Amino acid sequence: MLRRVAPRLIESEEVADLKKVSQTRTLPQAQFDAWFAAAPEFVMLSVSATVYDGAYSKLRVRHENVEYTAWTNVDFRFLGGISGFETDERSYSYFNFVDRVEKKKDTEMSLRAADLGYDYELRWKPSPVAFSSSTPEYVMVSEDLEAVPQEVYRRLDDLFAHYLAHKDELKVRYHNNRLMNAARKHYQKNRPLEPPQDIIINFYPLSERKAAR
Image 1 (cartoon, rainbow, N blue to C red):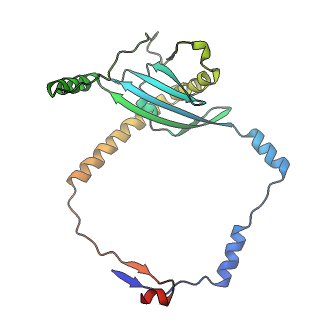
Image 2 (cartoon, rainbow, N blue to C red; image 1 turned 60 degrees about the vertical axis):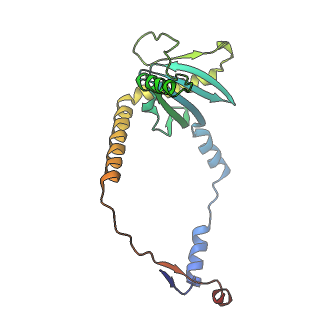
Image 3 (cartoon, rainbow, N blue to C red; image 1 turned 180 degrees about the vertical axis):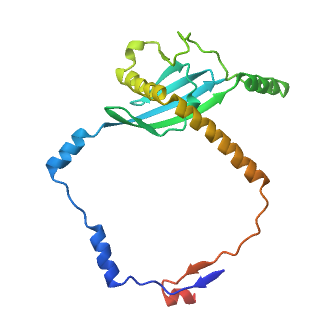
């Protein structure tokens, strides 16, 4: 249903108040320089991860338009829900994409594809590196490790330090999100249908001439 209303006029007092709100205050240059010098360095970190059976992950890290590969014994699903983190010297904006591959499901898909006459390349693969222990670690994989910039190591070191410091919290948050998503899907699937409701749209014409058309 459409309901025609009169256009709202902004009174002069409101305009004056808006002008007051819109006034800006300029910081002295020395104060601005001091604030900028004390602020942590802002860094953007982009990581995509493929998690294999929750046991290990393949990481792709982009730096200066180049992609570097690492393998880790950390389940990177736990790091998929954060958007940033901080160190003493840096403030990271964290962009991530996490994909999961399960050996059983991937093998079943391969068998079904073969029965239907399709070629399917298994996505599941064993880790190409042997981790020294169950302690979280990562191993860079490259034909020339000397070509991997130290900045890449520093960013991954900072990311893993954040994980170690907040490991329990990250795991709880991940599992809680899964429970909430499952509950939301169950509710959406089983909730009763709501009757349609009337929608009222208020409008006013820009001019009487246009309204008469």
